[in-house]
Image (cartoon, rainbow, N blue to C red; front, side, top):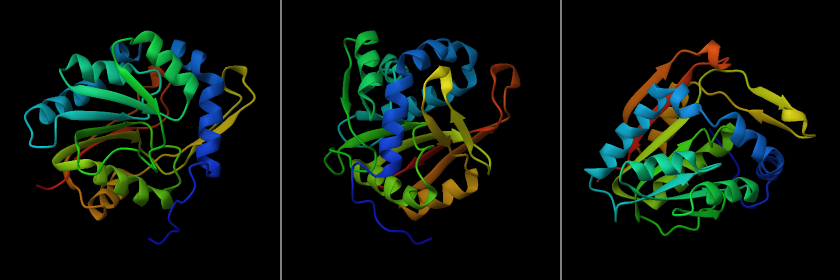
Length: 226
């Protein structure tokens, strides 16, 4: 796969994603308030990731929740004993995260240009936050993830599995629109390996129609080699 490297922090898809989530942040946070109790298997995957990081060899022990949204995944990781901070494009999402989790650290930033020193993190999480990135830019996202992790550090990636994107137009009545990309797990695994990761676990579960899901959900755990 060939692509032109990402060079602008305000590329069209980055800007569109930021505007979308700034507009819907409060409604989104309310809508997904009970997600943890509704999807216990998904959070068990995150708990397993936290255990791997806790007994691993990577970095200082600090973990980045990249694309943290309202901060619930950040809070869960903190509850598992990790030294974690959240990062997101949307200041509106970050305002909710700070309001709901006053003891945790959150900052604005883009996954494509992370202001994090190379080789310093024990873990990184991208919990449904790569799904707005065009596939030809994923190699640069994964290269950034690889750069910031210490040798032995772990990455957790969650995304919707499939081939056809979902487009949300005017969600919650807001005049915004955004594509949600679905990926084949084997393609994402190949891209992670090309970025220098070793795949450690792959979990795919079928859609829970009662929860409004229309596609399977995929969870990949990868490691930067020691």
